[in-house]
Length: 414
Ligand SMILES: *Cc1c(COP(=O)(O)O)cnc(C)c1O
Image 1 (cartoon, helix red, strand yellow):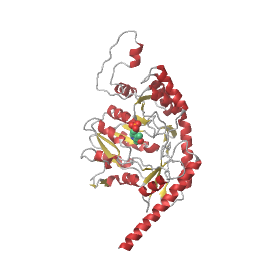
Image 2 (cartoon, rainbow, N blue to C red; image 1 turned 120 degrees about the vertical axis):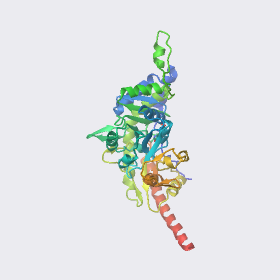
Image 3 (tube, protein in one colour; image 1 turned 90 degrees about the vertical axis):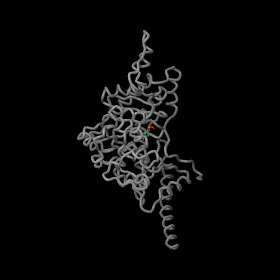
Image 4 (tube, helix red, strand yellow; image 1 turned 180 degrees about the vertical axis):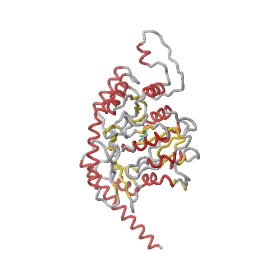
């Protein structure tokens, strides 16, 4: 192993301020979904520019509520990408619906708008677009198609707090939202964290009210109202709800994290620019690039490798030298959880699935197997980054030559 300290792929920037904030609800006695949650919602909605924000236990729960609220149910289809964290597609299945996968665009790793139309059927009830690893998807194009077919758009903005999109000549934050609902995650792997946590933002008051009801078992009276009431009141449960509450301890932490978010993004931009500067001259790799109309928060820095290189070799080489990496974003359709017929549908015409590979999802599969996520976190020093860059360059070189040696030996054996 390396004589240098281990470099993880990600690390939350969290400390004394959050620990102090957590004392408030803990010592105050109101520990779940109370005043801290309300304040966090208000501050988060102000930050992204949304009219309403509703905090929940995690982003997967947020996606479930969002999809159900826009009318996704048993027998429905939702057009989305396979190339995402599995939670995107899972949330569709929680509704009893079928995810219909379309391929991604090669440069942004996001849904290719041109492939949406053929994927739409009479059963389609929504489009779930993902702002993958913080990179905004082509929302104007997605929304145009959605409008043509009168379909609601739910944005999986799990990784995209602080990312921006050029919207009618103005830069706006993801989560305003531009679709009907946007869903955020505060898992430690994202740019800000509450341990676990999620948020739904919308401009629609009725939807917001629906989320607030469902997250708390559809209880007709909130805890706060009952707590304040001078008279005895009994709550009712008019429909099936869920326990998707965020705690006040999480929200208190989230409020401090939100204050750090501008600095976090600034630092990530700086480090990402520096990566790109130093990696651009390496043959066989393509650094990530933002489209003209989008600004990522650099939740992850994902490099594409091609030619003779082996993803596994490069990652193992770096790991042995104390640098953690991750492969490109997964593809849900390649997991056993999606092997059962009917658990998903391919959005391409005349689908051809051979050995688990789908001809219509080749960009997605290619991005999974030929991309590597390099470490990126707020506390990373230039010195750390120089070490990562040097290690990556050496790994790339070693991978390329090891391939040549192997193919040489195959020739000799023949
Ligand atoms: C992390 C992530 C989720 C799930 O978020 P949780 O808060 O862990 O439930 C969903 N979608 C995408 C794209 C993600 O990256």
